[in-house]
Amino acid sequence: MGGSFAKAVKKYAIADKVYGYARSEKSEKEIAELNLVDELVDIKTLKEKSDLIVLAIPVDNIIAILPELLDVSESTTIMDLGSTKEFIVKNIPQEIRSNFVAAHPMCGSEKFGPKAAMDNLYEGKTVVLCDLEDNTQLHEQRAIKVFQDIGMRLVFMDSKNHDIHACYMSHLPHAISYSLANTVMGHEDPKAIIALAAGGFTDMSRIAKSSPDMWTDIFRQNKDNLISSIDLFEDQMKKVRSMVEEERYDELKQWMEKANTLHEIL
Image (cartoon, rainbow, N blue to C red; front, side):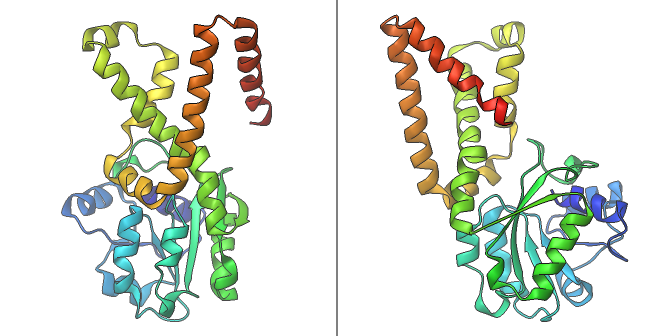
């Protein structure tokens, strides 16, 4: 997400200079090799020279780094790209609350790290901006402008509702994909998987390649919503099982036809 954001900012010449900061030597090396930023700096320099600081890191790390940002200028915007919002917002220190814009671009892939940076990742996609009433106009408008300039559609909502919707659109599908992958690996031998895995399985299991570290944090922060969504999904699985067991195939067909209508919306 961070590398792709840097690419977009440079492509549209939104900033005079793009700085980068990474904690690991491996990430720093990959960022430099890929020329994702103009200059890699330490966090002190980043705070001194940046108008906008973008936190494209796992959601728990977003909270962990906030104490290091308490001394930023009132004119410096801080923005995160995390997949959860309510827990993050509740943990923003009051000193930088007006600076901090809570954002979630609804895009990405199962790949992660600097090498996963993509051209045009954000263009035509949706970004959710949460609780902007807590930001001063400078930071609100700066965030809005940068997302518009890189070609994103903007949606505004409170962080609580964001986490409910993100759970059903993203977090539950990841839980299902991990579950499917583990079910198949627990039942099938590798040779059978290689020989017989087709498009449907590949599509549904693709996001099970996502970072376990990142998604453990997301599941933790959105625990209550995830549990509720799993309960509803289990109800649907029980329903299809019952229809098959009792050979209610006309009802099963209607159930499938109802599911087909989802893609009339999408």
